Image (cartoon, rainbow, N blue to C red; front, side):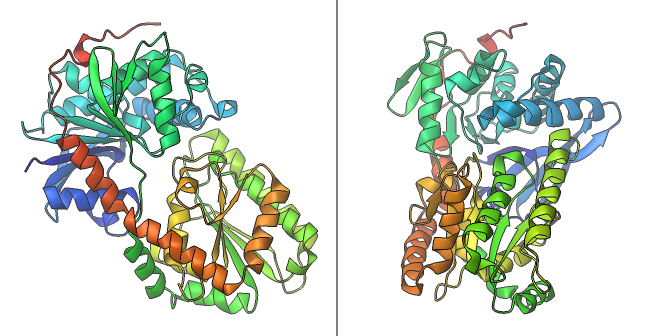
Length: 471
């Protein structure tokens, strides 16, 4: 059996991996099954030169990490990855910016990953690269002679061509993707957008059944919606119900119903719109005043990017204004927590909530929506209010689907969720959890790896023939 090599921007080391979820669960399960290595950035920054590979083995998996120099790291990560690619791929051009120096740093870090990784590879390896930070990794690996099968999975949405071409040199992104043997996306919508980009006359690609031919190569494409470990989520929720933090919340809630949102602090999550929708609920459904509490947990992220600092301040002001208008002596409607909590505690908090609010304005999948459903008590489940604009909406059709830009419609959806009869809640929950259990995170990783094993290294000229264009 070939060894699996997973590559991502950050590596969940042995200690962090024991409590992480989502991607980490699926990748680690696959690595342990096949025997393999997880390669990526350690999270450490050096003042000048880049670090050598550091290798730690645990549970049959090798964790290989490198350090990155300060100048390149800031421009690669905070700069091109998160100021350019993140808003571009989420079709949020109002947050998009481009800087040639940052692009060059992004290319250098991808080259660094390729050089360090190539020295660790064996002939029978298959390589599975994750997400938008490493679009050029296969391109660089091919340039230095790596011929093993390489797959790429994009965790965020893939934009339409009219959005993608806002990026100077967008054709280089498409050329880089063509260096992979398998390119996977979250949804059928993303797959259509990917195909449409390659079919543009200026690109000249051809889309065949299950594959794309472009830039002298043929590669396999498919939608692989990422799932969760349903049993793990349920178990964590049940085990942590007696946690002191969860118990304190339950005692303070009393008879009141909890509504909960769990998100990274990011503009794509639509948090300010969500706060305003809760305000609309209180304004238009007076019976909810004093009867519901909305808790938003939003851990800080990308502290070096000014946009994220501004979001935090906007949410603090909005929560203060809404609470100032509606708070009573014994009731505060919004609890905004700008910090991270243990995964088990979060699962138990979600189980406690009558309504889960997952209302991003754009999202590749959104695993919180799935985790909320998995964490629920099947005998008395809560209701998921879900944005139509995230990938999870394609699978979770029995949630209350809303447009996050329509604050009154979101408020109406919340009111419907709060009033929903028990039998209807049970039926919706039963049906959607069955979908989650069938298409779980293990099936996601298994399908992708099977596709990767089914692809033989291309005999046609690889990315080494693609000249790097200077603009």
